[in-house]
Image 1 (tube, helix red, strand yellow):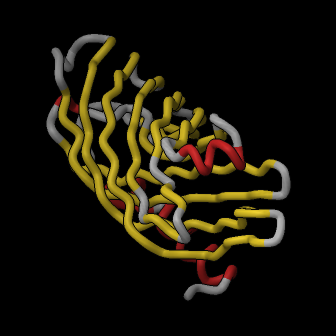
Image 2 (tube, rainbow, N blue to C red; image 1 turned 135 degrees about the vertical axis):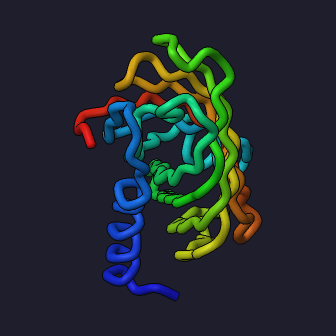
Length: 184
């Protein structure tokens, strides 16, 4: 089990992986923040925390730079706190991104599939007298369909699969918008 400090160090290092793995080519590339909404599929989580949660991330805004199938690293987090219950989930995944259209266009649709590590920190009231919680490392797998709009904007729909802990399924669908702020 990781301590809070060592986990923070690992997550910070993994956030820099997209920069380290960036391949040089003729296409301008941008890094930036990602924000969105996560919809858990578990009715137990929805009952205790609500139907929609905040999602955030950081990475390359153009999912298919140069118009070729690429490998890519992705960092995304999901968080919600309500009625004394709280969940934070983070995932660092690696996989392939495939363009589905003419890559010279201003609008390029794509699909992606990734797998990697997850961290889930949760504390949830099961009954008034029983509370389940923990800090767990596990897996994440996700599938995404999206569209690049120009070089800086990315809109995507993604489904994430996480492990089940203490009877709670943490899987869900998210809708995200990414904007490239920094050129590299």
